[in-house]
Image (cartoon, rainbow, N blue to C red; front, side):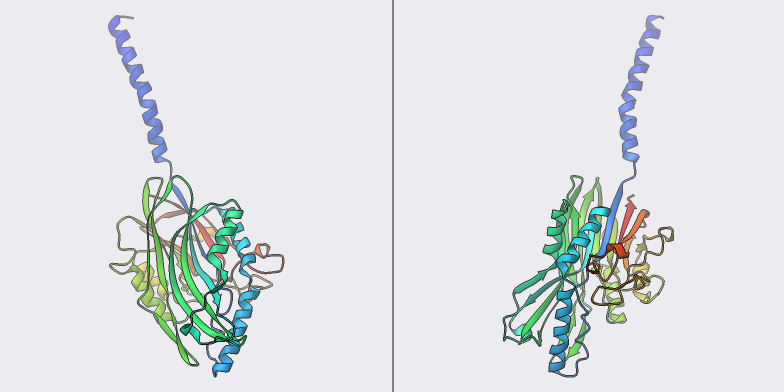
Length: 358
């Protein structure tokens, strides 16, 4: 081998060896990046519509007492253990929670509604759930929380009960998932419900986090649209996708939520879903994953003896631009998901979708 040939061979070998790490890095870059997202309505604990339609104040207080008894019967500390088990089994990176209730009561003998705000905490759903997640060895931080409806009323037990509702986002603690910003607000569109002596306002909204996941930036928006009245729900859907709304930003957006609107119009009409779709959001649940039914138990005491109530979809994971879902599972929809006393984790099932990021 001549000197020239030898030098050429060494140069070629050196170049080849130098290209190997570069090729490995390129292959690593091409590896699909997948994000697992859960949407979970955790149920406020009772039929909030029970007191509506009362004929007088005494009837209203009686019905309010029945609601409060039901909330205690659907004991959230038990349900929180079941919800934590779902998270442990599915390991979502981001969790959109709805109906995150804070139940408080006032002192005995004080029955003046919101005039004297009740402060004694009886059930704090978010704190209880986070404690159960930690006990299960799961590390999630609170990414964002938005207060929604806040109502207080007297019951026949001789004191006031106060319900404050939140929507919240939990973010898994992992080194490649970083929260950059938290935001949220209430919808302008609300609905007032008249009761004996007062008008109760149902307030809804959205909460969001901007995150960086494996060097990809995205926004997760979580919402709970109105269930009581279709036109209000549709107006809120328009606010969500409107110019200047939470989706009016560059980059990838993912939306979780209880939309109270079924894409197929089963049980719940599809109007709000169609508004979201017209705003560019795409339902990420493909038919190959199954029907994906998440709604709802028939009994407000969350002790249905069977699964017949789960017959339509309103708990959705949507994306803009479109993302491919590579895996999907419904949680909390089988008899084995109940506690030993027959209590379900929620009146809804949840959906967990693994999305392949662009």
